[in-house]
Amino acid sequence: MKKIICGKVACNEAIARDIYKMQIQSPELGQAKPGQFVNLYLADKSMLLPRPISICDIEEGCMTLVYKVVGKGTKALSAYKEQDDIRVSTPLGNGYFIEGEELEHHTCDYRGKKVALVGGGIGVPPMVLLAKRLQEQGAEVTAVVGFPEEAFLIQELKGFCQSVHIATDRGTIGFHGNVLELIQEKEILAQEYFACGPKVMLRALSQWCQQQQLSCQVSLEERMGCGYGACVGCTCKIKVVTEAGVEIQQKGVCKHGPVFFGEEVAWDA
Image (tube, rainbow, N blue to C red; front, side, top):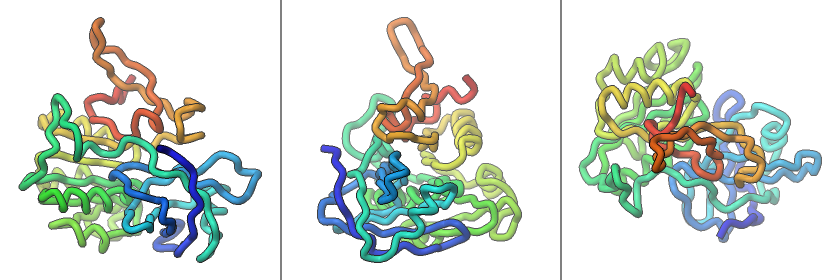
């Protein structure tokens, strides 16, 4: 059951320029699926809407979030100190399809399977929990992550991945270019791809995977308002099979996603 709980800030520190890692402790946190997110409720009452942040890691009553300071809300979030109280929702969204019920066109058996996790910028944090879960299921995990110029969470990814490849837009670290160019240049091949990051990156990767006839799951980063599907502020266009054929419908990313199979998304509609 979804609910809002009160947690305690265990740490909140800068790990790169404008990038912060916050850990929240609460015995009520429970478990989360990779790709899920939480809503953070700020103490400043002038900012009523919660801030949705993807889950980077979670274990034994401690949740790790990595976020970028981009506006007034996340700036206020960066000012939280150790031992401050903070209100947080239990995990929201569907998460990546890697466990549980088998889907018609997708199997969740990852034993011995080669998978590639592709993250861009602030889309990298959810790759950490995803890498951990896929490694636990016996997958051979490769990460391909891209940044404008400064990398973060590399050591965390190396703890769960056979290899981690880095691309930067300016060539300051690793490959000079974007993640798809890196995948093609280094011929980083996998049986299934998982991605989170800018829409232009997700679209390019999804279309490339479709050309290669490879499965690809993408986590969309549409700007959310309420995070519960009430405000319809984060809709995207999704292909839905109906009796009349394939229709394009508006779906709330927070309620129906944020994870979709790449071929489901109407990228150019």
